[in-house]
Length: 230
Figure (cartoon, rainbow, N blue to C red):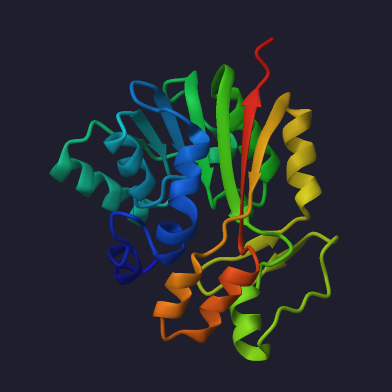
């Protein structure tokens, strides 16, 4: 990721994180004050910092050198007690397991070997621990550009698994059932599915007409689950 794109993130991340994701992710994690939380795929660390602000003892795992360097730089400046580890989530090493909660925000959709990554997240949890992950909603992955072009959403391919080309790196489309069934197979109980909707007032206040798409349809999906306590 180019340095200017990394620097463009603020304390809430970007527009989608600020208006659609953060409040819901933090709510679905539950109380984190005094708890050990793994930010699995922490990027430049905005979510790790929000969790630390809420009182969590945070470990962030991130493979990308540039993103990790930005996170470590801000930790040196702010001294929030966040520990960052450079590692591939698909082969997660010992980073302080077990955790009370693991959050994996907008990461699994970008990993080819996502099953191994999800399994690593679940293994890192204490029995009864909370796992929250978010992805682009599989049914509405091209919501914004499609709405901008057509004034409504169009979809002609859903059940297949395939690569989605991107400007910096590809994402991967998988149907929702793939993620949920894998989660259940790992011994987790699904607690909540959240499809965030943009506040209509935010869309009205913007000069960007395509933001109406985020009011009409969910571009993101957040899932909360609990590891089997047995």
